[in-house]
Image (cartoon, rainbow, N blue to C red; front, side, top):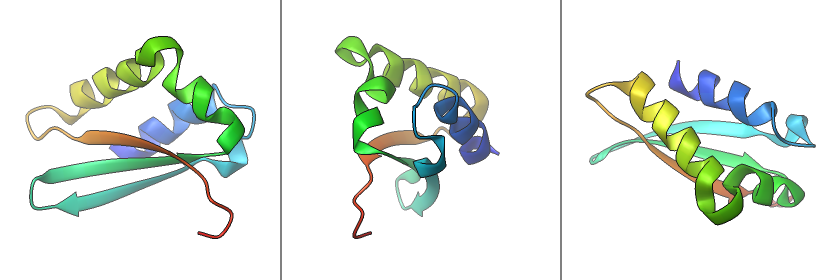
Length: 80
């Protein structure tokens, strides 16, 4: 649920919504949502002084509740 919600939010602000990929990775320390975007959109997702990224993290942590989740933003590499 968290990955789908975050993907929907990110797709709404980028210029290349087809390149948005959100992966939910389960690690020992908890869940990490890895967001991959087109290199041209990385600035939009991070925002000025990281404000947009912080807002995404706030929304995800509110949705995640007690379990929590970490969010990492990465630009897409065509070689994947």
